[in-house]
Length: 181
Image 1: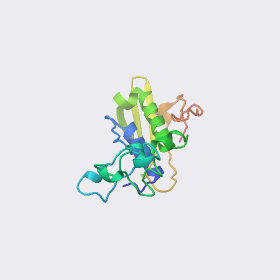
Image 2 (image 1 turned 45 degrees about the vertical axis):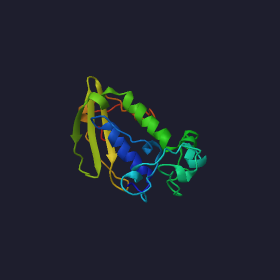
Image 3 (image 1 turned 30 degrees about the vertical axis):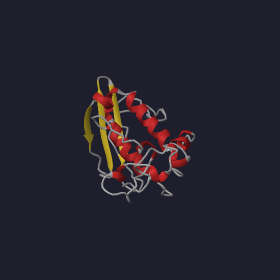
Image 4 (image 1 turned 90 degrees about the vertical axis):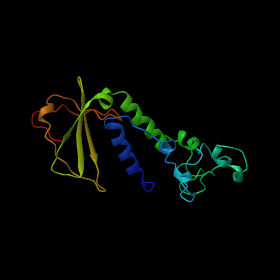
């Protein structure tokens, strides 16, 4: 559905994990595992987990013809290209990114229990919202366009706050009464 586009996958998962409610990740989504659309009915929705490069993606050593559902053989989504073992070995893998975004959500109560307030910048291709709970305040900014976008936000209400980018921990200068993002 997302054409195996890493940027789209990360954007939608960022929204999923920053919006209210309980995020649900269907098995295989954390590694970018595809579906076997050639199987009939709903069988193609998800085939055996792709654990490794081994026979049947490490799911089973049985004859592939005897499995209830075959492992995906596709060169883009199949276990030879996408599997847990390879992703655990790569610090830039989707699996590593997913673990990081889950850790961010778990370490900030605002994501699970906080209020949601949308801000409305003039550039409608940038989604901006605030998650707040008790003394925690998180400003979420998402570019929902295909191209880089400029956005201007009046940050006067956040005077003296020190912005911190949550995934890397980068700190920015304190906001003054004339700050714009």
